[in-house]
Length: 417
Image 1 (spheres, rainbow, N blue to C red):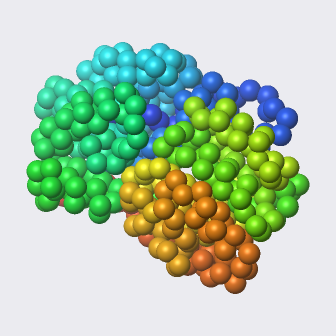
Image 2 (image 1 turned 135 degrees about the horizontal axis):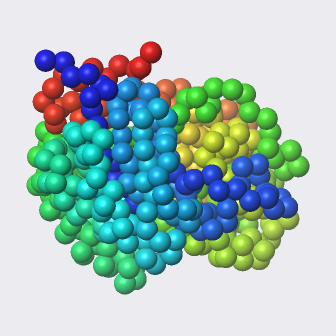
Image 3 (image 1 turned 90 degrees about the horizontal axis):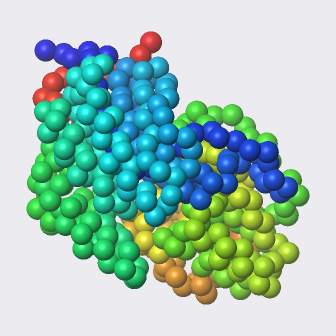
């Protein structure tokens, strides 16, 4: 029997989600749409935040009822509406080192989630945290329903680096990840590389689906005005979290070694902000570097449309959702040849790949793409053509099909009229 979409209730658990729009007066030099600096310190521009929010919106448009339980970031705790029927519960404390407490304080919301309608599916989004999967397993038991897990960053296979935090995440987090994914009814991964790794870990192949992150076509539909009118071209841009994983300092160093004349625009905020500011001030090209701060996700298409090249110099990366948005904007990409990035960026077709952490190689690639107008135009055309594979409306239908499969029903999930 066909199951009406309006009867489907998904409980979504994620340690990060789109931040509330707590605004403050724009500072001098900020781009339009900058949010409260406290929220920016929690890295709200990250791909996982955008992924979970856009997926929720797309499924809401398909008539799927959703309850989201997530960390409050630096905004207020409480419950708000999203779309037609989605409810977002933000919980926890606004202290980065105590971030994992969101799961404990969110437990009442998880337990009450079935009060307005029975929970049909628990969908957990796993990143670089330890609390989400245990909470999701408990929720699935309490509500007696299937568990779906999306792996945004495999702590066992993708996470890299040194230090006590990384060692803890890889050891304890890796164990939690492996045991939870083996018990999940379905696992969604962003790349084929991670799917292969999970198969090797003992997750049955028929439970694993590859559904990448994507972009919202509605945000890229209208022509965007130039938001960087005073910055000379060609413009090299970085858009994302200023965090060790993304290695923005590598880009600033490489920019200082370029032979070609160009401008660098860094959009984002996060724990590496002070490092990026110091490197920019010390750079021999300091007068051509713009540190624009954090902007809300809705403004990112305008930023991308104002650039000529996007750079993602990550030390490790599951996929890098900003890559699909850059391609939708028709931008060639220079990125690290690491993790799942090569599955998105095709070397010589949509962009150029360089070894992670190699400052000289990155500088040479930037010289090549900024100094050759023909190459840049060819890569831009390839990027725009490839972006057709990453629209969120179609990707959300693939996630809905995963729900359909674990429920064993023929859910009618066509877009609502």
